[in-house]
Amino acid sequence: MKSFFASGILALLLVFLPLQSAVASPEFRQAEVSKNISQFIRSNAVHYWSYMKGRANSSALKPYLKFQGFVAGDPHMGNFAPIPLRSQNGSRQMRFVNIDFDDAGFGPFAIDFARYVVTVEASHPKVKKGDLEEAYVLGLSGESVRPEKEIQEFLDMPVAEYDALAVGYVQKHTNSKGFLLEQDKLEADRGDIPRSAIAAQFPGMKLVDVAIRPRERGGSEGIRLWCLVEEKDGFRHIMELKPWETSGLTYYQQQPALEQWLMGVYETFWPKFDTSEYSLIEIKGHGLFWKRQKKFSMIDELKDEFKTANSLAIYDANLLGLAHGRQKQSAAYLAEINRDPKAFHKAIEAAVDDYLTVAKNAYEKLKKK
Image (tube, rainbow, N blue to C red; front, side, top):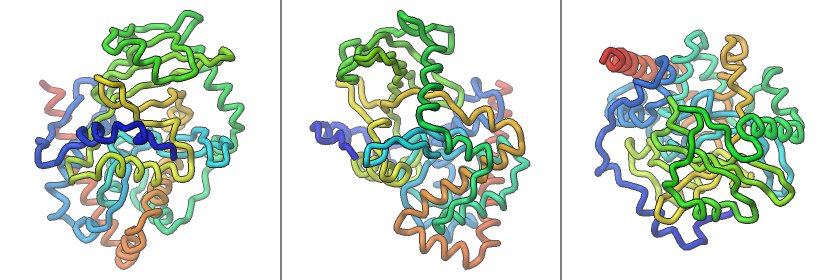
């Protein structure tokens, strides 16, 4: 992994990681821009971890809390997707991976899995919790579920075909001069960050244009910058600079120093792949940003129809189990689950039902205001 800490900004980065003792408990947010309970819950990973800190120790989850490692923090079906990743030998391969590290961190595996079940239950209540648990536990033991046809087609897609679709995505949002602007979707850059500072983040490329992506429902609070960059051969990319925010896990427990945190997240979710395509950078005077290529989603269209959504939910649960299962405490965690599978099922079910009730009540009250 190419470490950006070699640039000498480690001391600055460590300042950005707060201690939980100084962090106030968060309230629910983004009710006004959430169209349904599913979007509302996905907007509130921070609230979830704060809530679980106060509830988990007195719940049926308690026997599983000591088994910890790096977790997704906000696992849901929109945060797992097929993208081309570059392996250590330089080849690019299609891989189904976690594509959002905003709320990742170090915490209990079981609470992370419960968070995933909460999001699935909110969006696709017909999906059976038992099927998700089975796939998740298989992942913990190092076994992959067999992808359904629709998912396998993504994994079998030639990288060149994906790249062609990516070109089409760029063309959809731009013309020869720059971005195609649309109110509340893609707006003119306000110039808060000098163009020279932005251009410096893309060495060897020409910065053609910059636009603002307003806060999305279900998304992060900060404004994202979309940067249209051009290589020497004229090939264009849309690169996103997304403000780094403190992980929701900081509301559950203190997190590792940022260097250790970032390396742990990469090793858990993108093992043995080049992480430069999803890197954390500093723009002096403006803070930290995730820098990544903005790519179209090949998954959104599959989440609506139940049969496919069911298969996707199960597949993603298995991916989460595989990620948890790569870590030191996973074997003991798996043994505890297998000691009494019914107890684990009941613990997850109780935690999910509890949080869904709290979230639904809050959503209804906030919508009435």
